[in-house]
Image 1 (tube, one colour):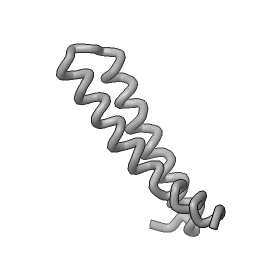
Image 2 (tube, rainbow, N blue to C red):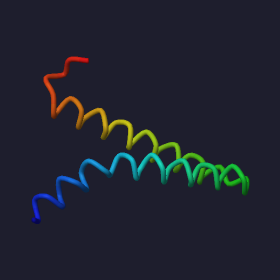
Image 3 (cartoon, rainbow, N blue to C red):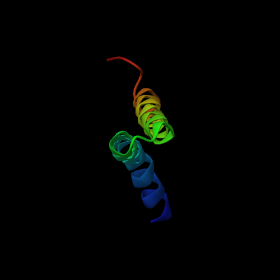
Image 4 (cartoon, rainbow, N blue to C red):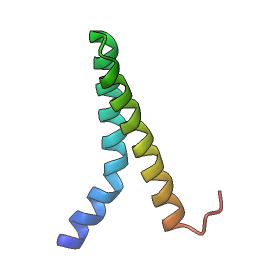
Length: 63
């Protein structure tokens, strides 16, 4: 059961990072806080990179 939870969290984490990053970036744009926008964009980039890593790790790398 513990391995299943770790597996699911690993797969869902990129989506959480991308969604959370979009929320933080949008909140930063609305309130005119530049640092929050950059943090949000960094979270989005981390989510995309994590997703790409998982994709290439789980497959042979062929698109």
